[in-house]
Image 1 (tube, rainbow, N blue to C red):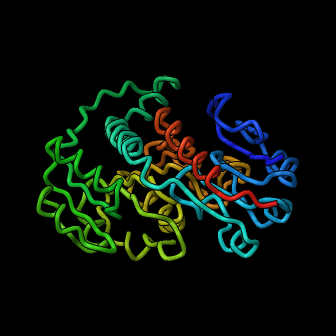
Image 2 (cartoon, one colour):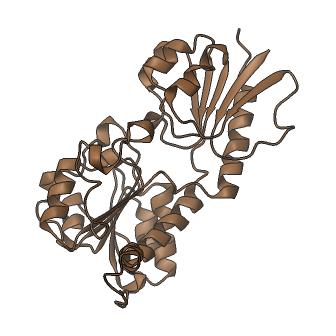
Length: 314
C-alpha cells in the first residue's frame, strides 16, 4: 500500500486521501527520531512541520519518491542537492501565503512600534507602565529587500494606508509598481541608511546568504526597525548583534532563527548570542507568518493534489 507521511499542526479530513493510501500524520514532531521511525516505509511526504529533511533522514527514506513542501522556501526544509541526487521529486506551494504573511507583517510592525512586547514584559515584572504614543504607519519611511509577490502586496497595503515614502531593492526593477504606488528604487545601502522600517521578503538561498552584513549595516539608521520575514540567514548574525548592541534604538524582528526546531536550545545555548538580547532589541518567533488557518488549509489541499498527481513508483 502507498504510504504518505504528513507533518504539521493542522486537522486532516477523513476523505482527503483515497482508500488505497495509508496516511501517517505526525502533527507536532518532537525530534528527528520520531520521523526516522516511519520514513523507511514512506513513499510520499508532505512536509508541513518544522523539521529539515537532511541527508541523514533521506538515507533512511529508502522508498521515498515524492516530497511536497508546504510553502515556498524549499531549501529551508530539504537538502535539495542530496534529495535530487537520490532521485526524489521535489515540489512546493508558491504564492499561496501572500495575504497571510502580509497580514502578519503589518501586525508585527504595529505591535513592535507600539512597544507591545516591552509592555507585556514590564507589566509582568512590575517595573514600568508604558504608554508612549505610537507613530502611525503612514508616517514611516519604509524600505523593502525583495519585491516579489509578498513585497508587492505589502507595498500595496502600505500605500492604501497612506504610506508614501517607500523604497525598495530587488534583483529586478518593478516599473509598474514604481508608477502605480510611487515606489523608489534604491541601492541596499542607501535604503538601510535612510528608512525607519526595513522589511525583508526575499527568498533565502546561497546567493542571498548574509546579503545584509557588517558593510551594509555600517552606516544604517541607528534607530532602524528590521522585520525579517524571510530566511534568518539573509542577515549576518555577527553583524546584526553588533548593530543592535551598539544602537539602543535599533530593533529586529525575525520569524525564524539561525538554529531552529530541535537545534534551538534557547538563549543559554545560543551560538550566535542573539536570543539573550533584551526584547526591546530583538523578538524572534517560530515561523508563524503563514500559519493562518484558511491559508494552511488551502496549501495542504494543493499539496495533496500535487502528491496524488505524482506517478506511483515502487
